Length: 87
Image 1 (cartoon, helix red, strand yellow):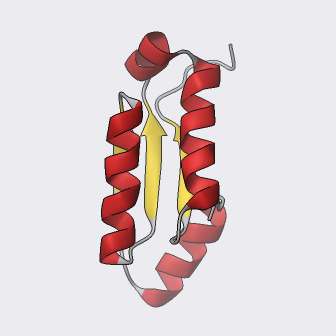
Image 2 (image 1 turned 180 degrees about the horizontal axis):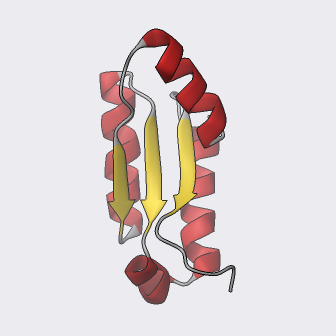
């Protein structure tokens, strides 16, 4: 399920747990991360770094992360990591 970082952090803070966050570089990375999170029944943050954006393109990276998040059995955040501008 796709959730916002704010929603996830609020729950984690109240429940006193950390949220794992992983940078993706390929579709296969993202699938493996979400699958692992589901197996562990853990929320997760999927992050696309600037190098991943250069490799995949912003639209493809966003589509990968959002589609996997929307269909996940656990809360998943889609996050653009270390962005310096909106372009």
